[in-house]
Image 1 (cartoon, one colour):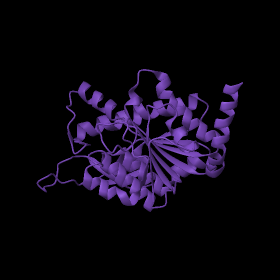
Image 2 (cartoon, helix red, strand yellow):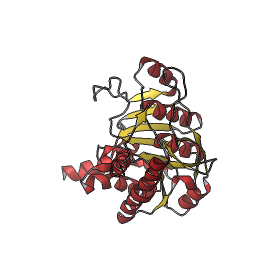
Image 3 (cartoon, helix red, strand yellow):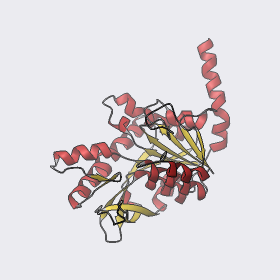
Image 4 (tube, one colour):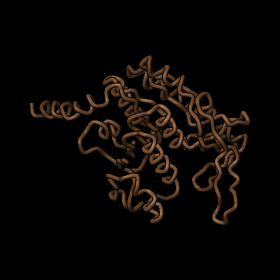
Length: 291
């Protein structure tokens, strides 16, 4: 009986959040090493969370990653993965692998998982909705870095996404984009997700990865910064707390907040039901970033 009472308590704790966010759009960036887990139950956990959001009339939009799967596919194709400042150097052969793995392998798997659990999802290849410009980065010497076909999402065609949401369907989008030159570019999924949140005027943006949140000490997984205001980000970058791959994530989070997104969350996808714990409990999990 006590267990049943505790379950009822959890539902009541979630009730005000369900009421607050009914009809809202949430963008979820789905990524991290847990996507590669050999245990199908681990991979289905996120899909269950998304189906739950659908059931309580929240509109989820998914932008997914898949870096490890891309690296494996490149090695099978005889291509050596190379990175600079956290970006995958992408020549034409690599871009073809990226496009295939993200849009025609990982994307359908996520869609199938959501549909199998009773949800409704539709896969959308990034180039069908994302426009990008070549990403420009400079090395320590101030000289431009040669990244190849690496893009930065600059525009989102929201019409196909809104058509899905109006029909009660969850769009699942791969992080590739079409450049002005007509080529497919490899893009940072965090940046793409933030641009989707801005374009759709989403209420919440959730970044899933395989770290507990923003860590004050990267060597200590217990040093999670639970609450952070956007104004503090530049100071933490100067201190080196926000570094490397966390920089585009946090810059994108700040851009989303400045555009009107209420809250951005960084959660650990390895924690079962991390999305639901962050959204529907008082304590939450991971790091929350607010204006």
